[in-house]
Length: 71
Image (cartoon, rainbow, N blue to C red; front, side):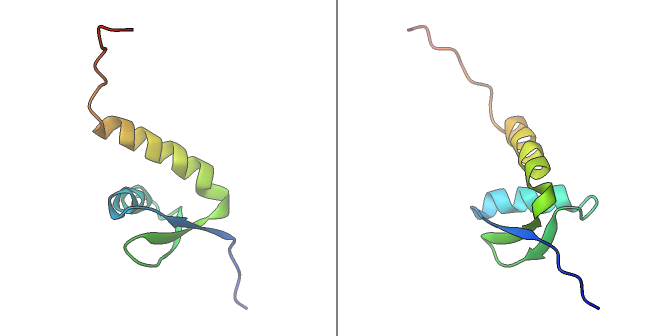
């Protein structure tokens, strides 16, 4: 008998989606269905964990903020 898995549709830029796919590729714990270049269905129970990992990955890729002299 088929089992249903609750999922959340995530719509994002292709660059963000590629990071999500990369995070999922280690254990396949997050993605239920890869729909197209901008949409993916993720397990509902894993959304907060995925957000945290995505934020960490984005912080790694962004250049450090420079402090401005004016306040």
